[in-house]
Amino acid sequence: MDTKLLEQLSRMVQGHEIWMENPSTDGREAKVDLRYGHNMVSDGIPPEHMVNPVVYTPSGLRLKPWATKEKDCYTMTFAAPMGGNYTVLVASSAIWNKNTEGWGMGPKYKFKDVTYSGAFHQMAKKIVHVGDGNGIGEPVVHGILELVPERTSLRVGDKAMVEVLYEGKPLANASFKAYSKSNRKENMLVTDDSGKVFIPIDQEGDWMFLVRHRDETKKVNEEFDETVFVTTLVMETR
Image 1 (spheres, rainbow, N blue to C red):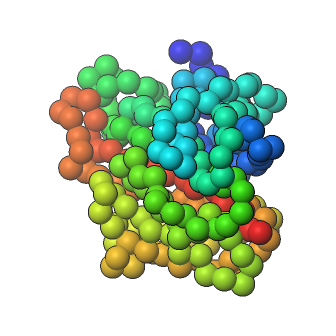
Image 2 (image 1 turned 45 degrees about the horizontal axis):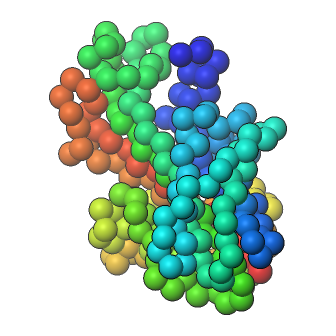
């Protein structure tokens, strides 16, 4: 693998994430941008292997969008002729190991003197609403670590509710980050016993919600010692 690409990807272990933002619709098609970086600041174009989007239509059909490479993102376009919620998902997985030479990608047995080894699964989720209304309806839950909002958009002055699910069950006491793009402030919260978190929306614009969960029981001998899941969901104020 190209050294520059390997360095870019290794930042995933240190805190980089994928996310989707900038949705738009024209009554026939919808678009959304996929980015890679940290706290909604891009760090180059997302590597091509990360660009594997799927879309679930309001009626439950599964579509494959087409992706266009832009200056610092991939723009994904899909047909959206009917009103309702279109849920876009992008997922990426890799095994990372660390030793005295730095970070390397691949199973643990390929490296010497490994001090850390983990499988990292990242998912970006975006709900593109077409038409009127703000209800979430029947939520789309396909990832192992899921963020399920109560509504499709945010309103300043309200508390937004998001439910965190792990393997389909509420994840209690999970660390949850709500990041406001407009004032670049991180709000660190924790889910309650029912896996829910309530975020005070005090800024206009885009908000990124992020949850990270480590599972040491998900390991494979000689390949990796734990699995780390990271999921993002970007929402906008109306």
